[in-house]
Image (cartoon, rainbow, N blue to C red; front, side, top):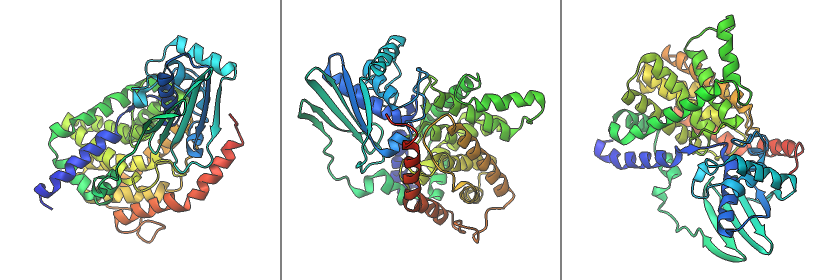
Length: 436
């Protein structure tokens, strides 16, 4: 394929990256509900007295156990209340970035007085679905988000629909998932290597944001403080300070801070802050070790983030498969490229990861997500080291084949079809633990 033929594809790659790699404050599932509530409150334009909300089972799963930024409190009702009292309806995934201590106090009062109710929308066809109705006396506004975390599909004021997303059927060749389905890992590597630096330098913001979140996590104040706990082991000799331990500690610390409620944004990937952290921080650490320049880091991050999106686009945004692992497959590609640069090494590393962590489940967003992030980073490093030694999981083993593209499809087929029942079982177990 010539450069002239590739250029339209490159423009689409950049468009997809800018759409799917963006700042997010807090876990994106409760944030989605907070955005629905904030938007409804904006249109009500008076003090909200009551919030009634409905969320899909998957959004419930990822909102039950996660700390809402700045509050020290857990759960979807907190997100809905805070969206009403202090949310910025125009800020997307950063809807809670301007919340004040007074807003938090007001949200707590609403919760204490039973003014916020979150229900399960059991018949939702979308994994990502949040509907919030806010009311004051006889006035009410309803806002519905569906399909993506910030995709508002309807605003209803007093029974009058003032906004309805009536998208014309897009050209099939212009849909991101279709574009990626017609691409390949090899084309993504070629793009990352050859696209003009000026067109991709924006990805360096991912390194800045997620590294700041990592440094905050190392304070030991957030979540399960896994990164900070592991870092302490340097002093007592239980852990050696090397590339792998630094990757695990710095990446996990960012997840600690994010899941623990730090008021710092993560640069997300495909709708998830943890995925963005996992696609970013191992590559940043490797870049630091190799003393890479900004352009090399940017190209490695572009490869990591786009490869992560490419793989995840082949299975649902929310599923029973822990997406930190597919994000780490992107990181493995970026790390391998920085060290070795050969496509064959990158492909072997991704295939080995599929053979290693394809069974890690997603049982909701919580502080323990940082544990899964640390596992994913460790797997990425092992896979890269094996690939550098010209070794990968054999095509005779499990779902791995001798073609990385088919191996990716096999993994995503499990997540899309076979693991649906797993997801139902996980949600059933979790729903019995907590009722809103």
